Length: 135
Image (cartoon, rainbow, N blue to C red; front, side):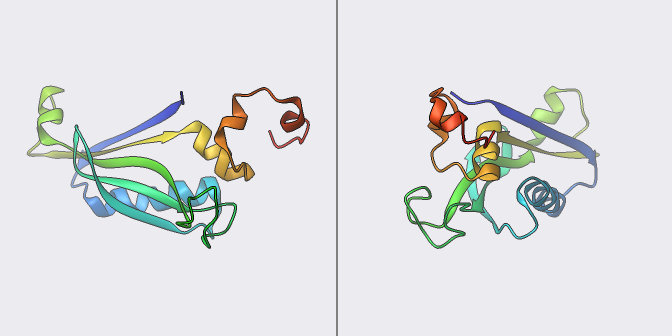
């Protein structure tokens, strides 16, 4: 179970560079200016190209630990350029307009923001965890 916030931008002349810039501003605004960001190709049904966005691990600062499975990275969100067929099905002229979309998990942002090493702690209602004042 998780909760997701969706973002969609449609305008003339949008490109993958606009998506990348938006992702960088979003991640650094949420997680701090020193957070490293990694973009990986991925597949999502309604976007092409699609990108998976990772942030450097908040527990080990990218060095590798149990939380990030010793990779130094935490998967953060999915994104991509809206497929022209999706725009056309919504009544938008895809020859004039392009779009990008993203979806980010609320729990993952809380986990990264507050240094919670296991996201399941958010749902367990353990008073010892809640008493820490992290949330």
